[in-house]
Image 1 (cartoon, rainbow, N blue to C red):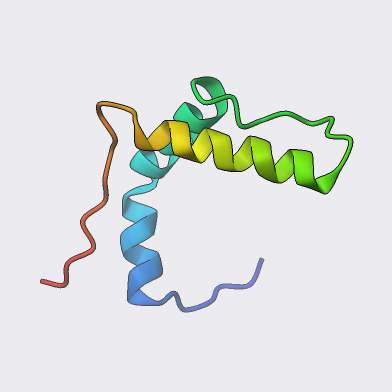
Image 2: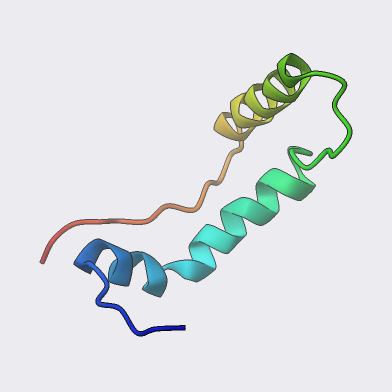
Length: 69
């Protein structure tokens, strides 16, 4: 893989990878986003939007502060 320059926002998000992985884990395991057999695209979107709506009601959500110093 060739080395490439990363933007500053990409560098900050790379440092916050643990938080991003935590959110993905919560969406997969608690909100049950990962479901591989949908009979139509509409069913996939309904499942995804329902899981994201459920995530909004979680009492504790990890967050990333992207403020410039």
